[in-house]
Amino acid sequence: MVSPIHELTQAGLEYWQSLALGDELPRRRQVEPWDIPMLLPYVNLVGVFRQESGPVRLRHLLEGSEIVERFKRSSTGKWFDENYTAEHLQNQLPAYLETIEKRVPTCGQISLVKNGIEHLRYERLITPLRGEADDVDVLFIVFGFFQLSKSEGDETPEMLPLHTVWT
Image 1 (cartoon, rainbow, N blue to C red):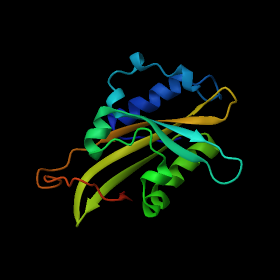
Image 2 (cartoon, rainbow, N blue to C red):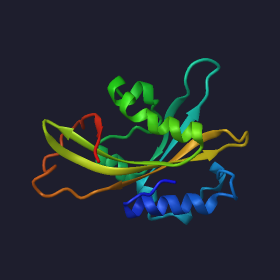
Image 3 (cartoon, one colour):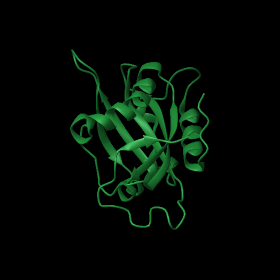
């Protein structure tokens, strides 16, 4: 099981676990916004769309206000494969696909670096939600942003760079 370190991702995991019925994944209809008001600005819902042939497609369904603010743009309604570069997808998709295929939460710490300067550091918890057909059809994602020192990230660029994983 994953062990998030940020208080928001910990709270997101506890909420997701509270919705699970024994070994069954929570259903997406169980997520109630009024149960998690402190998490809402940090929640991203991603739709999982299966195709007859080819890989699943992922689409941002909803992004919390703090996510939009930190990333300097909204991706709500956008498909991953149309919104991100191939390099970005190569770095980030494995965690999403693991959550979908293994039906388990994943958690990782990520840093955005441009010109040798770290502009954003966060922890991302990805949890699976099932639909009526019992397939994972939505990912409930919680972001926990870490505070950078004043000299780091002071001048956040308009366009953030690709994600790179940090440990």
